Image (cartoon, rainbow, N blue to C red; front, side, top):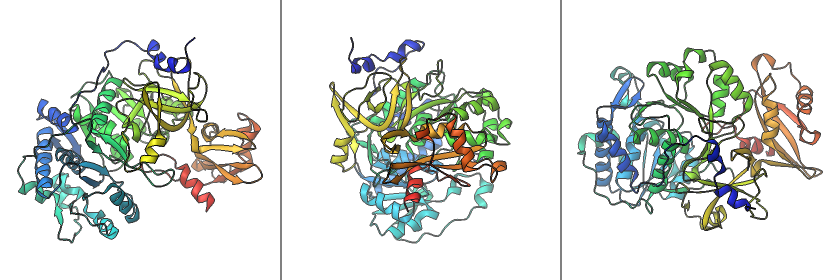
Length: 554
């Protein structure tokens, strides 16, 4: 009889997938190399469409090389960290690849971060410089962090001429502050000659959301990112490099937008239709204008779009793939979406520590309620978090991952890094903190973050189980479930509910509880139901249970 670990390593899911050529090894090259190769294959092809402005791969390469030259002349060198405090824009892309061409490490910062949050990331990462929106520079200045230099840019710089004329620039004082366009005009397209060791040199330092304690920098080497690109290409065999049109509205500072959308699309030579923010009307219009073939979203967006008045204006069936990641996709959302659009959503899973993707539902055999199977080169298993032994298939436990895309560790946090990994069977397994199970066919099912487990009178309740039931209520638009401390019982279950517009004031807390009792054991039924107009969300659109807990504790 096989041991539990042998079952996981046998990759049982491959029995249920059609045979297809996959990726057997990760190319030993740097991210800038992959980008340059894409620009050389078809330099005249449009790389980015930005609110009516088209930028070819030749133009993108030229701007990248010029900025790389400028950054090197300003003193940026191999091993330095440089922060990107930018909205989705051509400037983000140019800055990202230019910094990597200098051998530097990029640490993207959320554009909605406050001065306090920016200061923390600049100091923790040890960033020497920053490239930011002109309107955000004041927040940088207020941090008081000593930087060697700053580069500022206005979002209008790559808009069509008429829109550019209508834009307002923000005055930016400072001796060591440079305008990006001035640097591009005054420097040649000659990037510095830098030797990069893909397995050792750090390409990106994204910061985790800080769900417990302060955010941590995730060390991703060039090899990690190239592995993620190779894996991503193999995960969607129906896509053709250089021929796809990808909508890019998810934020690039987040690993999903940065790797799955930006890097994957540009390093394959595809067209990226770029948005500074997820404007529903503009996205739907662009779908038809550019004949989009790939759509990446998050569950809250699909929940919103399935009831949106303009959703029928786009032909969703034409898309080759519609992907959902970054959070759990509720079955009611999937069913409502399919009824409305006639198309299917493919659910996947990944995290910053795995350079985005680790699982995806096979396109030829998806399973509703599952986030899919491990992608090529990635090994996944389930462990008992208390005994650290591998759990048998069908048992719930903590998801662990191993593969070439898994991070090297956390920046300057050796103790956190040691806790994050488990050495077993000659492999270095990353502990994800997510409670899952693998079914008999090798598909993985998400239950909860381990920290979101609610303990009531000795019972363990997954917040997701309760939320799934709440989302099935016809009058519930959104819901978040948390545990509220109560010394008498451990924690009580609190449901924060957003009702559909026409149901507000008409559905009571008792009715919600009664509905839950039809599908849940009594100990899982919410003790407290609070109605709100909206729920707090993370930068990528995920309902933030952490903020709900913090608000309740306060």
